[in-house]
Amino acid sequence: MNDYLCHDFKSPRTDTSRRLPPTFRFIPIAFYLAVVAGACLITLDVMKSRQAKQDIIVADQLKAEHEETKAKYDAERAAIELERAKAEQVAKWVEGTRVIQPICVATARAIKGEVRLANFALDRSTELPAQMDLTLRLAGGDVLALQDIQRAIEGLNYRTYSPQQNRDVGMVDFKATLVFIEN
Image: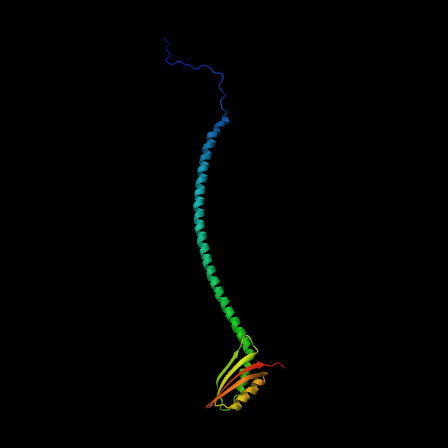
């Protein structure tokens, strides 16, 4: 018998392909490097995603703070605009009193002696700014004091229309419409 326990049953084959070139040995190395690089990139993406979420939260907080301060400044601006509108109305009113001031001064200077001005009102209509309603009450006055006041007002180019006088004991009430007459 034969001393060999195992026989080689291989037969030489000619139909097999050649061996792979030695550069193909780098393919598994490149594969493992790609897997490691992919894992690193995924880790970096997860870290960047978390950082982006934190940045979004910070940006939302900053946006809320900016909107809050903007709303505060808008409220302050609205208050300032309201004050400006009120100031413009006061300025218009003061400008409108330039016409009234000479009448008030002339009336006060026309009062002499023991006569006192108990009530004095000038109302100007917005529709007819050239006309004013005069209402006055003289204490201790008579018709002569009232005529002095009318002459002083007429000296300012105002005419009295539809005057009404009422006399009580020691009091004279006078109502009239003053119309400016241009020369």
